[in-house]
Length: 368
Image (cartoon, rainbow, N blue to C red; front, side):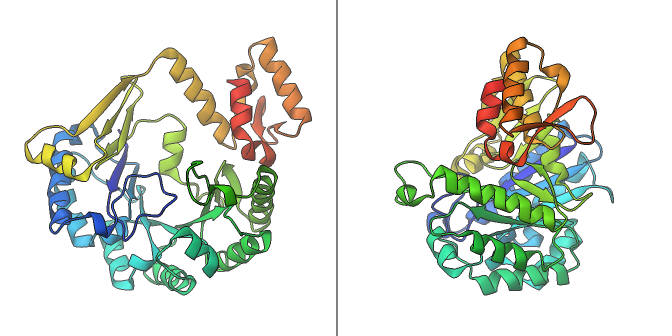
């Protein structure tokens, strides 16, 4: 496995819309950070043999990895270098939240080996930040972004949310304009989704307004020289997120930390660690594996996932995949609807349009 994911479970506060496993400070106990550091070292020792001699990508996600001091990360990773190494070509990404960024820490992360930052900005308008429950302000986000570049990072991504209650197209334009005034190389924008029981669910924009947000974002980012290379992701040429691309193109990856997922296509299986920090730590302190679920993929699952992942990407699918009269007929209908188009650069392939990206669930269901 040439890709490694490490999940850091700590957050300053748990965002009300977040589905990823994380713990706000109010749910942690004294010493949890030290116990996690030691447990992660033990898990690396148990699982490191799955890794290739050289890593293509590393991704520190969470949670908020930038809450973990660089020196603690270095200690936890010590066993890793018995199994693998990084090279100048390795993409080493780390998620960071503005309120946990300082210039000194960012310089130390660079010294550790991190060379790509993904910052969770989500919004810049104060009212939107408040409704999302973010702990940072507009000023904190902009200060943090400036410090990331001052620390020497030149491959920087930011996250935004669209379809937020009360958000306008003008709000999106203002956020995009301000963020791209920095030399960011990548932007991820996700549509806010909430379960029906969530207090803000009824306030979400309707489907037409959500579609307007997504199409507006596509046009605005293309105008600024970004490629819309995946449903939710835009990059400057040559700056696509390689770690995520490895996942979307079906390559193997090893996940460490509570709730992390791993995938081994050669063995046709995936597995997941326990989604509990305290159970994760306890199992590893006992010398036991924290893996709680192993799934052997069926042929049907593999084929469905192949379609889902390929249609997420700008490269689309080979026309040869339209191998039945029904699929070809559905594809023709969706071309007329403006959801699918012949690829403008790659022969004998079709891809989703910007509108198709926004309505990808419908397209995938129809073709797969």
